Each structure stands twice: as structure tokens, then as C-alpha cells.
Amino acid sequence: MKGVAFIVAVVMVMAISATDAQTICNMPASDLKACKPAVTPPNPPPPTSTCCSALSHADMPCLCSYKNSNLLPTLGIDPNLAMKLPSFCKLPHPANC
Image 1 (spheres, rainbow, N blue to C red):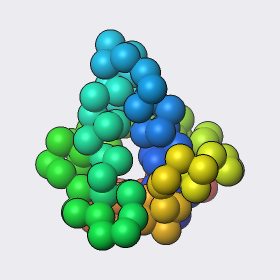
Image 2 (image 1 turned 90 degrees about the vertical axis):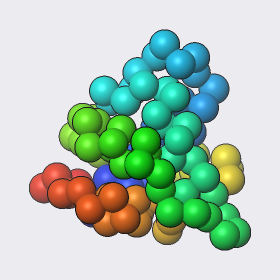
Image 3 (image 1 turned 180 degrees about the vertical axis):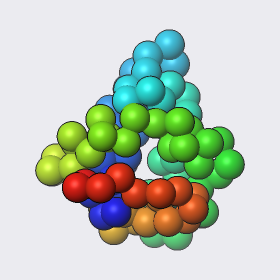
Image 4 (image 1 turned 120 degrees about the vertical axis):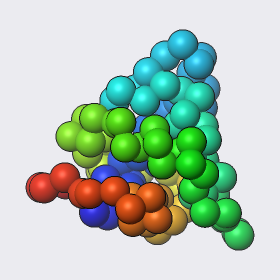
């Protein structure tokens, strides 16, 4: 569970600088951007329906491949908040992630 959320946040950060035409792990960059407020301190709002919908269509094993990145804190993303995204969106967590 923690790995998936961390990966989601890493991919979101990567997508922020990408054009909306790009997709990462089956998530359009515009949808990834919708998740950024929910993982940015100090008082993040809950993830939006756009964010949760994007996560529900994401290639979770692909997102899991980003779980060991140290990039998040350098980009203003709180890894602890990122780890909570799937739970907030009531999404299943892939095994071995």
C-alpha cells in the first residue's frame, strides 16, 4: 500500500512538467496533476474525484516501479501523504508493492 502511493506521487511529479498529451502508467499528465494538492503539505485537501478516477485506471505495477525514488521530498511532495492516496480513494492495492 505504501509503495503504491509513493509511486503515484513520484509519477505525478514527473507528469507535472510533462504536457497533457503524455501518459505515465496509463495516467494522463492532467490527471496526475489533479492529485498533487492531496500530497502537498501543510494542509492538503482530500484527493479529488478526478485524481481517484485516474488512479483507478492506472497501471499499478507500473506505478510500483517508481516506489524507491527519493525525488518526492525535493519536489514538495510529502511521501506520507502520498502513501495515503489509494486508501483515501478506496482503491485496492496491488500485491508485492
